[in-house]
Length: 195
Image (cartoon, rainbow, N blue to C red; front, side):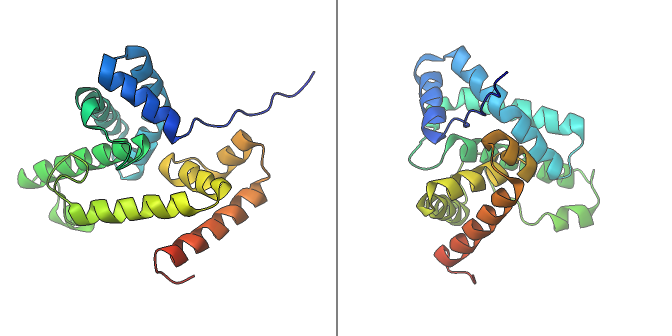
């Protein structure tokens, strides 16, 4: 019996194409592919921000609903679909913190730990500096060798563990870790940080 090779994850162009069909034709099949791919990743991300399982699931659903409703505002030249969608989820989370804070539902010290919220759920609409930083990071990742850029995206944008990446790509775990270390060193140099 032959062992099946792991298929590479679809890239940003694939997701941009899926999103284009959602925007132009309200293509439910494309939307469901986007949902199936990104919903678990968004859920892990939101759980990592400290939300409970029910809250995280609610925000995933709201994020996907926003993606559907605002599909025509997606611009692949400004951000990848994953970046755009994670930004929507993050901003919805911050909006929820703001609402909870104004109704005194959360202790003040919890809100302070999370930092200043941004104004709007649209990517870059009210936070030009944050968007510029985000775009700069995206460009720095794009400037990396393809293999390093792919591992950075899988690890940090898709929230995959090093073991998951190793398994998915058929790459030794040590190679995944060392490649990520080299990629981070290049990113730091490229963004003007210490190497």
